Length: 289
Image (cartoon, rainbow, N blue to C red; front, side, top):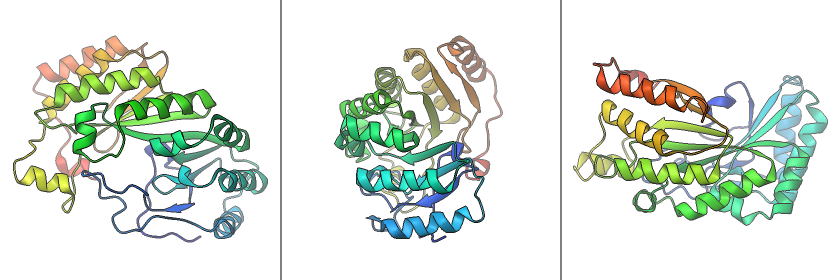
């Protein structure tokens, strides 16, 4: 198996076989992100990918999940990606699900027929970073897409039958925009109605533009209590039909989980108790583990 640079995967893919089909991120300009700064984006040769899969199959033949990295592997040509998925079916007979990172614009570029063919070939779940539903914040972080494009991409993926997991980042708007971040993000998530919603909490690394903005005082970060207030506002304004909600990433100050809307009232009451009490939040050191 060949890996280049640091390799990242969603928390739910912790026990998956990870295979790089692309290297890095084709956008790689978000002000908060340091994940792929050591790489220049490219799509790997399909034969190299197959060689990695074949090598892995000799050791992990009974693996149940495979995750296709890096940052937005859906940028790969549909025909090539379909060939990889069918090859996985052939040499990993026990594999139950293949997952992939997918940027909004890469989803939009695919036709409905292309997405349907990928589902048929074995693509089971796509992960899309929404980050925020606020156009102001999306411009500030240089995400490269508008909220309307997030909704378009999310709906398109949901209509394909491929499971969709989206992420938001708590605190991304700082103290000035926390309420807008919560309310506008709730609108986008409600419009998409994804299968899964993961809530991370902002963690900044030296060398990123947002880190410098915080150091200079241009952006003021939220306190843990303010993060809980923002989360309460988000959930209170969200209207989804059946969405598994998780806020149990290492970066989160408090672990929350439930299925929306069934557990909405319970989660809101839990947040209200945390906000009102002198709660013992997770320390900064442990958020980085």
